[in-house]
Image 1 (cartoon, helix red, strand yellow):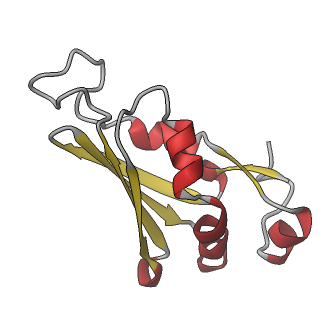
Image 2 (cartoon, helix red, strand yellow; image 1 turned 135 degrees about the vertical axis):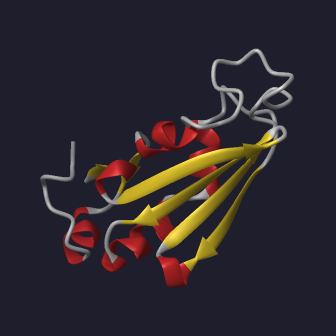
Length: 119
């Protein structure tokens, strides 16, 4: 089943210099394991590959059902130096929410993710 991150999570992003920070929070406790397993550093790095020149790090915050991603080299020098439309990384969370995760049907069903979430 293909599930967009937005169907199972909220997100918020910001910046610090040339790095962006994206927090992803599961909408339900039972959906956090899906994020933990399928929203990987590799998937996020691939999703933002055209924009970033640095590494992507992931931090797990299980007690909040959340993941935090730190993307190095994505803001072209940061807010005061960049000519990018979003030099402060405010819309990167929206971009991440559009990422489609491929989750086996049985795993999605066991977590209670129905067909309405799949698009």
